Amino acid sequence: MVWDDRSNIYFVPFATIGLIALNGLIGLGPILFLRDQQLAHFFMRFGVSPASFIDPALMASQGLQTSSVFSVLTHMFLHANEGHLIGNMWMLWVFADNVEEALDTPLFLAVYLISGLAALAAHVLANLHSPVPVIGASGAIAGMMGAYLYMFPNNRMSIVFVYQIIRFPAWVFVGLWFIEQVVSGLLSDETDGVAWWAHVGGFAAGMLMARICCYSDRFACEKTPPGVLVEHQSGLAILLRREAGDIPMRARDGMVRHEDGLGVSAVSEPQRTDASLRSRLGLVHHDRGIRILGRGKKPPRS
Image (cartoon, rainbow, N blue to C red; front, side, top):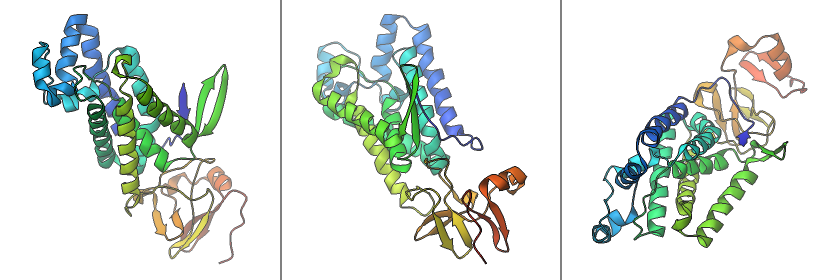
């Protein structure tokens, strides 16, 4: 089991929760209520068989049902069995909530959908004449992992290994995972039942979308070291991070942009600045607002 240590308890990832619920509702129905033969026909219809779009004559010659035009969307919500569904949803929960918080819900959903479509395109290109349908959300989830890697490379990941918890930066885990997908795609074929190139395509699309978003003034992608103070006309600001991980900061958190990086010039929830919080974060009041100083730092003279 793997998870990340960066959890913002004050942000509720409604879109991520909604995607998990939707995948569960749509994915569990066929698994629980259709028999094996019925399930196979269902997957042929609502999964994507590359040959259905590239070589329909092949499908007809073999007497196989072609994929529905809607399958380019429906295949992302179908799963082969309960284990496939649970595994994908756990990875979606680990990586997608951070990306949703950074991008906000509408753009997050767009990145998720585009990643899923890019994953499908990569799979089709790698298996042009395959009649085997592809199903699953892993391509779109790979896009979330790509976006996560670009935005939060230094977040701490934890994994249980032989009764021990091992912690390492996100770039190590996600990077090794991506290498595994590429190597597996080169060494295997579709008979092993895993759409490796879909993972690669989705991952690349998610990382590209994150890069594009990070060039926009509206979104924050922290790349500067934790605790770096930056000057801004509205006052002194500090990049807030929990340990060595990254915390996305949006306009509603009082984000300000400066050529040296991103900072928070005011506390977004002043009602929470009780004595213990002020002591822990080193908050000091100033005529231009609340300044956030690093733990143990003395306030500068003003």
